[in-house]
Length: 251
Ligand SMILES: Nc1ncnc2c1ncn2[C@@H]1O[C@H](COP(=O)(O)OP(=O)(O)OP(=O)(O)O)[C@@H](O)[C@H]1O
Ligand SMILES: [Mg+2]
Image (tube, rainbow, N blue to C red; front, side, top):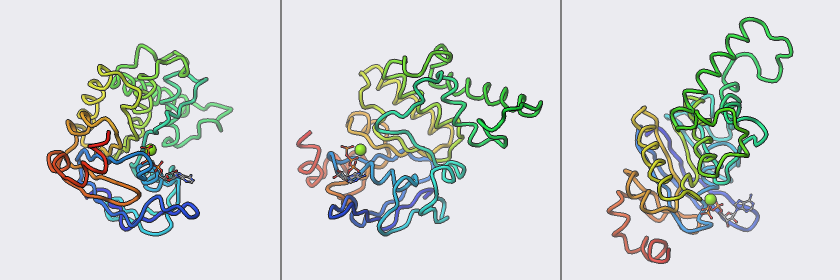
């Protein structure tokens, strides 16, 4: 298990968004997290990636306790994510959006270098080349110099994935990567996620697109009303009466 969530509870005032949720993510797997709106899926990702602090419970990355680590510290450890609502720097170019991610890993700060020394110039060139390779990976290299806010929506989701990949993660969490994509883009996404897995990277996916989830996930965790309903293979999940009545039957 590369990632473990142990007894996570998260209360927002009187609302319990997550109630004693535990799960494990097998190294190298594609794991899906599904459940109705408001089930707590994004809240769980926010806790794992250090954006929210849990009320109780712990998170482990390869048996190292990472509860309460900052998102930056977690990215440095190889845990990265994409967002349900795409979060890009709209006024920067597509390429710069990927480079910004990489700079958090480099030794000389991105904005701090008013004077560029040869080493920094060389480092920036390397980051630019590496970032271009991740744009190629998502087939966005033709758009490298376009302003990010001019990208069609489907491509902005791919850009978020490029940026996360440039951090050279061991685990990537994707929050509804297929939301807003057309069927052709969703097929491209499925292929891309499989390629990410083939690179040895563990993928955790929150998604409402059941065709995609059932197609690419090896294990699926079902959340409902902040609780873990069950976990199983796509077939087990599809045949589980509790899941059908809580989620699959009504969607
Ligand atoms: N920052 C917050 N403050 C207060 N309540 C919150 C906050 N974030 C989430 N919630 C509440 O926690 C519950 C779980 O929300 P969450 O966004 O995790 O659901 P979700 O499973 O991701 O749903 P969706 O499929 O619609 O994205 C909801 O009732 C939501 O209103
Ligand atoms: Mg959500």
